[in-house]
Image (cartoon, helix red, strand yellow):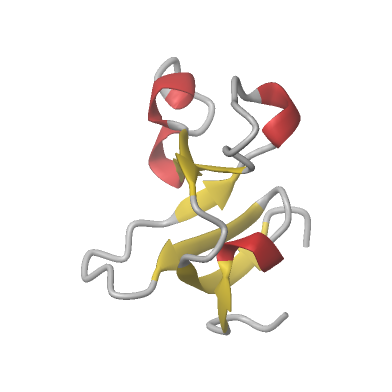
Length: 79
């Protein structure tokens, strides 16, 4: 996947950074590991604003998201 490709959230992997299509503030989010999140069967995708990663607020700011949301891919933290 290339930078600035518009895709749906369910096509991203853990560690991918993105922002939502239509978000004028372009808040950068990162896909979080679903195994580390408290979830129900319906909650399969989680994201956290990059500005809160590694802080005490990370668990509070990580939220479930629908997989069909259109997002703009930015990069993977491992690349």
